[in-house]
Image: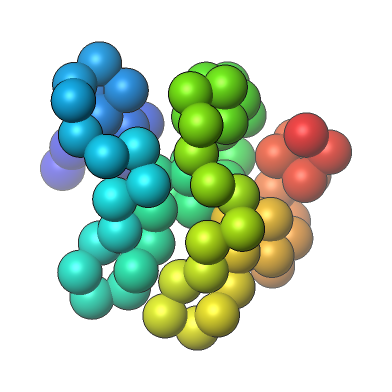
Length: 77
């Protein structure tokens, strides 16, 4: 299984839309980083212009998803 962090790094290094959503869940790379507690990746995405206000298919933002999963390192950012 490919680690989500590796996929996000690939997106950061490519010409992909940094706010690209997954087709079934509408999750963005920032949401994936947030729910997995990848603080550095979340910071890198934000520095490159990720929109933290986008919501997934359940109308939750990256911050709300991190809060639900108890990812304090990301919540404090």
